[in-house]
Image (tube, rainbow, N blue to C red; front, side, top):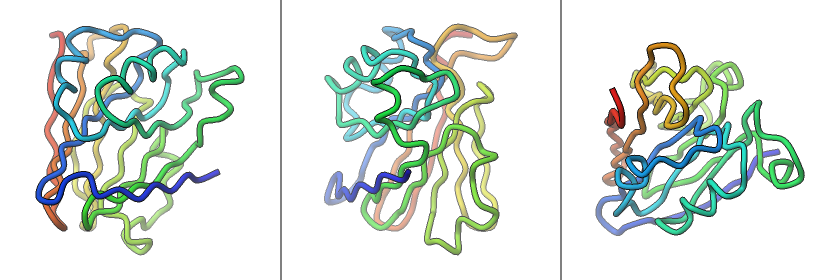
Length: 165
């Protein structure tokens, strides 16, 4: 199931908060990082509706279902979502393995994923891939992190923010 949302988040620059793998933990540091965003993308493993409710108090949320999202509330979430911010189409999936081989051919400029808990920004064949890492419970020695996507017209840039070292 694919949910398509069309959004013109800001006439000049859109600030989109990126978060994933919260695993039912809403950290104050994550909420502070997301404050002031025009929209928020959650790349799955939310685990409870209350997480999305907390994020919705900051900005509109686009979320996808992760492998740990179960129950009636989670079945309503898509496994993939696409949204457009200005002239950039963004694909959101939990696991990067679900991304087709050539997202650029479908007009996608940014792919946001989660699942691995490893923060990453990478550009491949003109497509920006961003995994904000995990903002939930610490896993192994990975940082607790979130991200920010800035869309200005047809240009998108991303940054990662360590919430806890």
